[in-house]
Image (cartoon, rainbow, N blue to C red; front, side, top):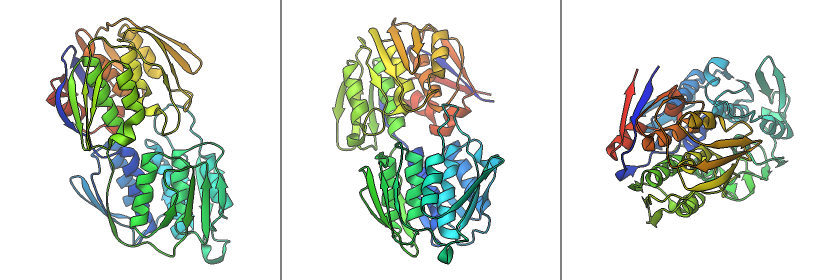
Length: 421
């Protein structure tokens, strides 16, 4: 099992090219199930979750061809509608095959998903929405079995779905199911994330009829079939944010390229609050760190508010910044596991329910720590970059699920990171 050894204390300087977004690429890859025609994708990141996703699609019968960051997928011979636990257990996004399989083929059997241990993240909203569209669903022995065999033409029916809470995965699953349903579906209290818009724009390119992307009310008019399409995956907001925080923490100067700054506003605001200078360009952001870091107050919430996937990185910033502050997690109930590892490095953190109170002491010491989930891994890398001495981070397979060549990109900016087995 690989681990990272990081020698801290080097300010970062230079440019980094931000990869395609994992959280956009996964549902868009899965959208290939909706069409018999080819879906050609560019800017797909080379990540473990992407490999898991394409392995699952191949097992279902999708023909997957890859050329570096480009993929061509054709689902005209799908004959298996069973997504087994062995393929689903490591990647929560696997649940997204449920809607497309049901809409296109009238049946699906999907294992209840796994992924990072950061909370329950129930799939009841996915199931409730599909039931409102006419599907019969049974949950038994860890599997969701769904069918439309009892419906005329085995087709889902358009309807109005009000989601009890904002859910990115639920919005994606129901949106994909609705594009082939009979009639019109309206999703109320829908997620507004840029990755939702990216999926919607790809579906539109494939021939879907969708209005309201980026709002909390998405309207989908079902069509008979989808056509061949080409689409470029958006940039990874969380990777960009991670490098921005790294620049701030190390007092460095980092230019993040290939991004849309308008989709980074909540993170940009916090980077400015911590005392760093931010220059915004059309397709890039330059962060110039200030050695007098100020801690910032964080409250996570659905987009366009502060993203939960950046909470851990800013906790790493706060523990070396001046002053005490609070980080409140409102999305997931178990997302402070990285705090104990930061404490091992000398951080002062007090957890009270869903709030972490940080007291910056400006000083961390390298030691052995263990990654507990994807974004926790990133927070430990950031802490190690500024810690005195060497830090060894174990279980970095979490990191490889969501960051493409992270140590190579940091080393190109002047960091000292080695991957060992």
